[in-house]
Length: 424
Ligand code: ATP
Ligand code: MG
Image (tube, rainbow, N blue to C red; front, side, top):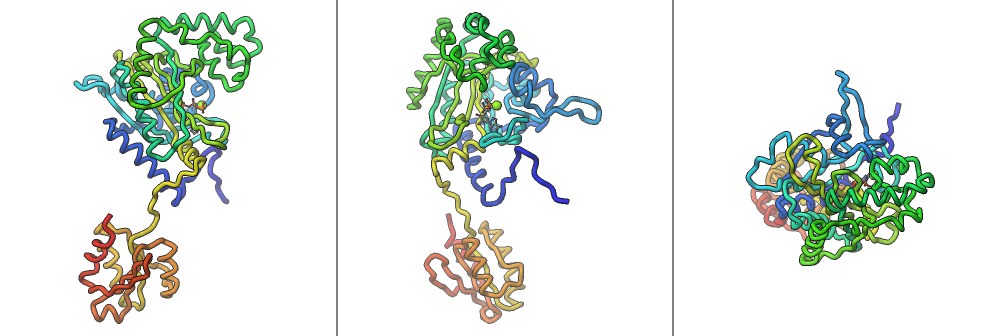
């Protein structure tokens, strides 16, 4: 019986996984520079955390969660996103008591959503995200956005676009909400069933509907920007000023929404502008959530964060034809001739590796010719050739694969020689 991989998931094979590590390293290094520290939370949580923390009216909670009962009948859910868990952990571990705030966290790991798989959309996908919890300084909003942009830039993307919006504070949102209901209500029967439900639950989400995105009422919908009170306006212009000071260009799109009730002020998305990137162009999304800690039973602690998937980042790199600087080769391949030489080279190989060189040898009893071929396939920078004769004379031949130059080296100097020649 043969098994297939579940729909919407993928194997990241050697050759490809190096690209993942490469961009994940960029994410980690950037977090280090911006002083965000890694948090690792469980892959599953109590279902209730997501229904509260992500929001009952969202697509995620309505239809995308992998929910199951464990053997004791508790309802658990594979995490569909990272914010709820990070905030739960912030509250549960009393990270708010730390004298320095905000608490700045990042995560990288798999998320699970039961969606219709397509390019850029999987059922298991990897998200890199950050959360800054415990400050409502607009400088933090700019920092969070800058970090995301920095990761894309360092990875080599050129055609990316930042879109921002403000959802205002509670008062601004309440006024806007009423205006939205007045706007959509008379013709709500022209909208999809989800939107009809959203009208009273969370009318803002109608602006984000994928089915009704071309309806004329969306274009004429009242803009949140007209409903921002003075405080919210001031907050939003501070964020824009900081972005401008940093040198990050952006567009303001009043229809950009992140649909949860406790989302407020800054919302943003980063899109790929690359030609041929496909239907899904959003690479990352984020925003401010000032009521979330309280929603899940903690003290007031305003937060902001974003998440991006590694899949879409890599797809954008492909679309822009960016070649990552990945060194796939090994430092040294030992070619042996004769049994004694083979036996001796086992410990030689060990020493090379312990010195930090990537080294390989043949395990298939290949003839010399086959071993050279393998060295070539593995992109070895050096090929060390050891026969029984050389061994008895206490020497080894080292060939520079690039220049073809060959050098005779004393066996007891071999490790030092290799180290000196492969220093990075
Ligand atoms: P979309 O509108 O594409 O469904 P979303 O609003 O559901 O996105 P978020 O919950 O904001 O997405 O997640 C943040 C980021 O995670 C997205 O911008 C995208 O990069 C990525 N992402 C979301 N869902 C998937 C998925 N199913 N497969 C791959 N990446 C995803
Ligand atoms: Mg989605």
